[in-house]
Amino acid sequence: MSFRATILTLYPEMFPGHLGTSLAGKAMERGQWSLDTVQIRDFATDRHRTVDDTPAGGGAGMVLKPDVLGRAIDHASENDNRPRLLMSPRGKPLTQKRVRELADGDGVIIVCGRFEGVDQRVIEGRGLEEVSIGDYILSGGEPAALILLDAIVRILPGVMGNDLSGLHESFEGGLLEHPHYTRPQIWESREIPAILTSGNHAAIAKWQREQAEQLTRERRPDLLDKRSSK
Ligand code: SAH
Image 1 (cartoon, rainbow, N blue to C red):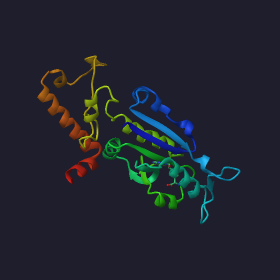
Image 2: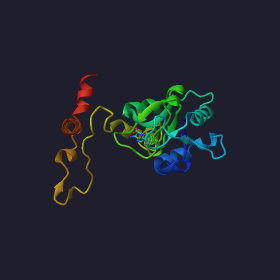
Image 3: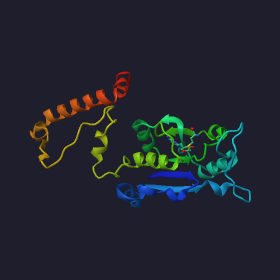
């Protein structure tokens, strides 16, 4: 069964966005994954098709209504065991590990928040897993959902031309990746490190490993701490 993503959003026209092009788009055409959208507004019942209301307790902005969103989620997840995610800056920061777990499953149901966010009761009542893509605030969950899906789709079996390249990326081994070079041999008087053109594969692997460790020490010591505490 191929990977299936269902997106709940007020802006279905934002999908598939960039995922309709390049490798992800071709994989979609080949049927290796699929995406459908659910317009949350279709589940409003009043004449004005209202989806939001003012926050209880006062304050700025509006909140997505639990009744409308709850119906949209129930519609999307009928007879369905896919994980239900809510894109949210309060969520657990997304990691390559979680991306891999999700890519190993049947698919995802993703709720895109808007306004100030969604009513807490629908998060609890429908068991939504909150996922953050970083410590900054977007205007809506849609770009976050596209990023999450991008990360998932590129590692689905057969999506990337060279399946091996997915295994050597930054984070996969808990390290940032070593630097890359390609021809010309000399560019603006900068040379490709000699070891990379030596043909000595063991020495090259050792150099790449050392570079990865050094880079990670300098830029992301937190990743090394996580590795040693595993
Ligand atoms: N008032 C909220 C922010 C709402 S932003 C707060 O301070 O926590 C509106 C919507 O954008 C959110 O409901 C969420 O779906 C999405 N969003 C914003 N930033 C995000 C992030 N860093 N990661 C994932 N989703 C995000």
